[in-house]
Image (cartoon, rainbow, N blue to C red; front, side):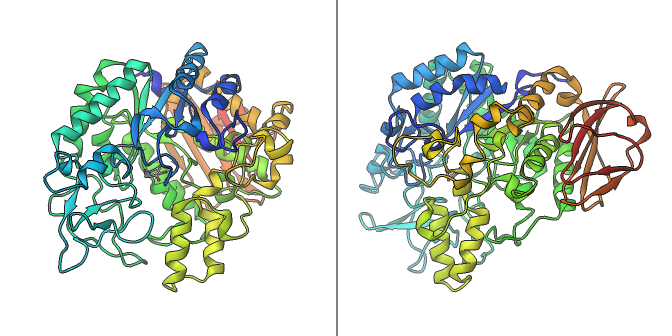
Length: 553
Ligand code: NOJ
């Protein structure tokens, strides 16, 4: 058993724009985060992953960086950042920066130079190609609609942008680019940060001939086309040697398009690259083929198949990241649970199911309250460029009607996760005294931290308990995982085993009552956590809607 502190940790993701606004401009900021450090400490989390706070024109809310060593003015100053880092460290909380280096902003000085002329010293920092047959160099699409290429008048060539045209892709094959990135990362480590979450790091190495891919519903190949490219592992090993080996960091690679076999290379426990990866196969269980814009409900059997394949596949080889939510996903209680009558029960059930697996759990702000998707009315209510562009592209091409597309956005838009954190039942949910940059979910009077802090059986207190249990029972961290009942459409049940200890986790993913025959060894065992309060584990138990229970043999 290879013990590591980051395997025993729980990470909490903060999306700063929507967490807490300290100065009334309607935008969350760093001082706001500092003011909530005790809340995080009480929750029991060990690490904060901070979505980008760097200088940015905010085409993609900070994922388009124009200066990696400056703080976005709307969020505060470098002094504010240092104060926040100190406040976290004082409480024993580590801080992970979001490292967005597949691309920069088009307003980054490197790109400003690069586009000036073909012989500019920064030209080769980015990926430039001439037109092919008078059109884009290949058929790749941007993640945010349209082609992944933008024609630049100045030099009459195209540059690659797998995300928006204000996010040009860096050319990692250029050693100068890698040196700049490594120098910048070392600068942040010198400042005292504890690690990095690496944005779409699986996309940094492109095949030199940039081959066409299979087109999707909008006519373009997926932005994931270059995933796991020819030199990605070499570059990450170089990063390990030149940066990460200096300190006991935590690293997680956001690896869109990663397969299990590839993940073993990125996160192999010999420590040559990253500690763990985010994979997205379980986020695709409710997609319509390769198209995420649908309101199809997942089949639990698919979810279990994906989760179990990763649990077993990485066992003793690499390490899983566990998440249902982040700033790019809708709210899990609306997606995989029930945001009506059983909101609280299903939020607790989902948390139990995830936190009892092997891997490092990630809690996305508001998930610990069971925050839900948002009743957005019209397209003007959305702020996310992905949602807005997809709406215009797919309705414009007649793929979906406006009504259909709005329905899909309400279900899947990233903005569902980006509305303000619901602190209390006061104006704007206590997020800001000004006008929030995006609407507040109207259910804040019912769903908010203040109410849940004061109520023992709240979702929030349930999360606190789950997080505490992980520190108390080694089996939750290190036990091996085995799926039970793979064919059940309602029940997700699995065991964990560590030495002669056994843990059973049973979750009812349905709003109905379901009979379950627990293996005999668990009958009358020690219940670690349960969401109904009076479960009785044994043969012929009747699971209530969204019931969850974890029991030691
Ligand atoms: C993944 C991030 O999580 C997402 O929010 C962002 O839009 C893209 N990468 C581009 O940086």
